[in-house]
Every structure is written in C-alpha cells, then in structure tokens.
Amino acid sequence: MTDNNFIPQNLDYSNLKKGSFTFKTPSNIALVKYWGKEKIQIPKNSSISFTLSACFTLTTLDFEKKLKSDDNFDFEVFFEDKNHDDFKPKIKKFFERIDSYLPFLKDYKFTIKTRNSFPHSSGIASSASGMAALSLCLMQIEKELNPNISDEYFNKKASFLARLGSGSASRSIEGEVVVWGKHPAIDHSSDVLGVKFPYPIHQNFKNYHDTILLVDKGEKQVSSTVGHDLMNNHPFAEQRFKQAYDNLNEMSIILQTGNLKDFISLVESEALTLHAMMMTSNPYFILMKPNTLKIIEKIWAFRKETNSNICFTLDAGANVHVLFPEKEKEQIHGFITNKLIEHCQNKQFICDRIGLGAKMV
Ligand code: PMV
Image 1 (spheres, rainbow, N blue to C red):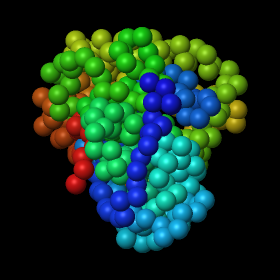
Image 2 (cartoon, rainbow, N blue to C red):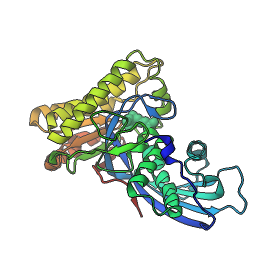
Image 3 (cartoon, rainbow, N blue to C red):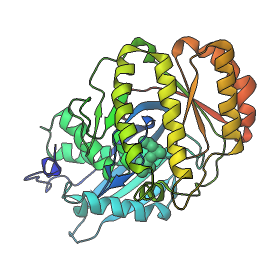
Image 4 (cartoon, protein in one colour):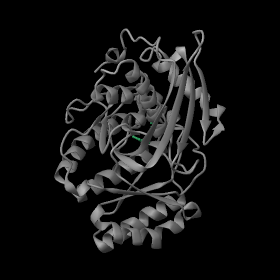
C-alpha cells in the first residue's frame, strides 16, 4: 500500500448535505514499542500491540455542507460536552495532513464531540483512541459517498489516516493484536498503516488482562513528539531499532506458540528499554515515579514466590500496565488489590483486557 492508494477519485458530494456518525474506539498497549520516527509519522521500527477494550474514546462527528465552499477547515470541538479550543491546533494540523486523502474536508462544517471512558489526565494517552475515532467517523463519510468501498479498504484507510494524527493510533482500529511498521515476519505489514496480526493467536493470550495502575495522573513532562525526536542522534538508536526488529520476530512466534515465560521477559525488557532510551537521550528525562518502581519490585517478588505469569509494561508515563492470562485472574486480582493499589494515586486503577477493535454506534 502506498499513499496514492488512498486518494479517492471522482467523489460526488453534491447530494450529501449533512449527517452524524459515532464510533467507539479503543486504546492500545504496545508490547514491542514504537519510539523514534522519520518524515511524517513513519516509524523507525515496527511495533505490535494488544488492542484494549475498557479504555476507549467515544466520538460523534456531525457534519453539514457549507453554503459556499472556501479554503478553510471549519470545525468545533467539544470534550465531555464543553467547548475545547485547546484541541483545535492538533486537529487542524491533522486535517492539513489528511486533506488530500479526504477532499471533502473543506466543503463541510464539522462538530466533533468526544469523551473518554478513562478519567481525564489519568496519564492514559487519549491521542491513539481519539485520532482513530475521528478517522473512522471521517471514513464513514467517505463510505456514504462511495458505498462500494470494502471493509478491508475502510479499515486500512482509517488506520492510515489515524497514523497521520498520532502514530500509535494506527493500531487502534482493529483487534486483538495489531502490527504497525513493515517487517518480513508479518505478511502485508506496512509503514503507513496498522494490520491485524495475520496468524492464529494461541489460547493462552485469549482474554488477556491488562490492569492499568494509575500511579501519576499529572501532565507529562515530555510529550511523545519530543521523545520521538530525541531518538534522532541518540547514541543507542541503531541498536535499539535492531533490537525492536528482532523482538517483533520473536513476539510473532510467542503469540503463536503461547510461550508465557518468553512473553514476560520480552515485554518487560521492551518496557524498560523504552524508558532507558528516555534516560539516555540528550536532554535526558525520567517518566517513572518511585511508585512505578515499587510496583515493579512487588510484581517480580510475587512472580518468584508463586510462579505466576504476571508481568508489567509501561507507556510513556508512570502508570503500570499489569498483564496476565485469564486463567490466573482471581489470584492476580487479589494481589493487585491487596498489595499494588496502595501505590496508585487515590488508589485508582482500571481493569481492562484485550479487545476486538473499534465499533460504529
Ligand atoms: O503515538 P505516539 O506518538 O503518542 O507514540 C506512542 C509511543 C509509545 O506509547 C511510548 C509506544 C507505543 O508504541 O505505543
């Protein structure tokens, strides 16, 4: 797939006056992390993620044809029913990037109404689910104009557009496991969009749990845009990209064979490597908090004691994603409530699990 595949020909929108679409779109958690990009949102290495379920964004896009076309993007943004002009610059930039792929953007006035299932400023990034939700709503307009487009094209283009809003958003369209970035071990993988993991996933990973411990809900000190940029001229960049390449190979085998011990060591190493990249960039920074480390130490001790298959991963923040198989959920829920939530801000956590992808509502 190249960018040109997504430039629609001869769309006739003279008859589509107005409408409204709503999509519920999940967040995702990377197992092999994306950190470092080039050009416009092309990843330096391929990444793979579990699509989540309980953490989602619900976005309604109302659109109405302008009386007279002009050269401006015309839109309003409401977050949790309140006008949110702070989101406008990011969305305007997104519209500029996708304009040539959705040539009707300047012909309509849009109202974007969005909300998240997770608490605002919980440290859970809403850019992946948010950008994916908006892309799906826009694709539904294209589908209205051209009902013949296939579901496959619809999802691919939605992922392609979402990627231009936020890289990891390309992995929030489909479930249960998605790969973004071209890799020889994954058929049809691509740098410009996320694809559903194309091989059978072992039963051990069915219903896999991700309990998100909200350690620090403050604003991120360093945005992921700045973090990605710091991988340019990073002293360990080339080794890191090579390691991610090898890890994706290995993760593909693990997901098919169900080897949980290998899963644990790969996922935890990826999480710590992501943070090691942050700590060794110039300027350097640390996103983990003391409570992040306390939780990690307790997970390691519990695993040693019980031989459980619990493990953790981290995003670009202090929160800890606790991953574990369905079979062990009672024992691990007990451990989380008795031992880990004391390290969360206001004892807050979210019980999530692997999910099936976005849905129109
Ligand atoms: O999509 P971005 O630009 O917010 O980058 C996300 C990067 C990580 O969440 C740290 C890793 C990943 O692959 O999701």
